Each structure stands twice: as C-alpha cells, then as structure tokens.
Image (tube, helix red, strand yellow):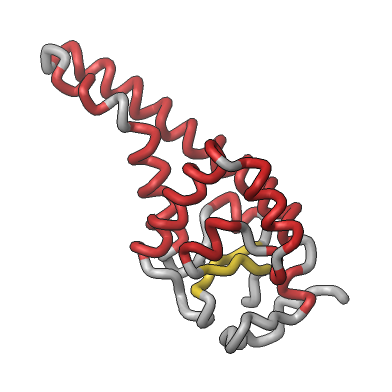
Length: 158
C-alpha cells in the first residue's frame, strides 16, 4: 500500500496497531537517516572543535576541557531538540520522511528524546547485533531503544 501525505494523523492506541503505510520502508529509511544525522553531528562537532581549539590558546587551555564531551553533548542536544520540536524529527529523519512520537501518538518531549538518543548510542555501540534482531522480529519495526524510551518511528503523516 502506498503512503499518502494528505491523510490525517491519528493517535496510536492500545498495543500500537499502526496502518501498514505508516511503517512502509521505515527500517531502511531509518538507516539512511542515522547516516545523515551522524554526518550532520560530525560537521557541527568539527566546527565547534576548531572554535574551542582556537579559544583554548586565548584561555590558556581552559576551553580544551570542553572538547572530550563535545560529541556526546552535541548528539544529545541535536536529537533532543530536533525530535521534541514541532517537526518531530531530526534533520536526517526529515530527509527520509520520518517522524517520532510517543506510543500514545503525542509529540515526544525533550526528556524522552534525550533518553532515546542515549539508549540509541549505548545500544548501537554495545549490542549492535541484538538491536538489529529486535527490529526485525518486533511488531511495528521498533528497535530496542524505541521500546525502552516509549517511542515509535513512522512515516510522516502531515
């Protein structure tokens, strides 16, 4: 079944029975979205790294203390702010026509989006094969970190 953008968004109820069009190609699109988002985050971190490195000369190395936590901080803010925003998606997810919501259908608050980002990075670095297996056998194509943070990723409905 093909996906139509003009269909109204309906809240997800009960045990997350979603229409097939909402999940059509989600897994593949998510992989590309993750790649785009990692590129965007890396570019932001690279710019901030250069700025902090130059400022480190002026501040006698004080700003260099901000460099080690730079990638996790940028990734957390990038995911948290963009997913909890009005478009309900990171820039990579928007490119791939995806959005994230709570399992109730409501917009994802910053805290859930930040927890989702933390669980994503932890699960992909520690449990990569298991995370993929979960997504292949789970209903609604949800990954382990989606289930733990109470969110679902679907095709955009608006």
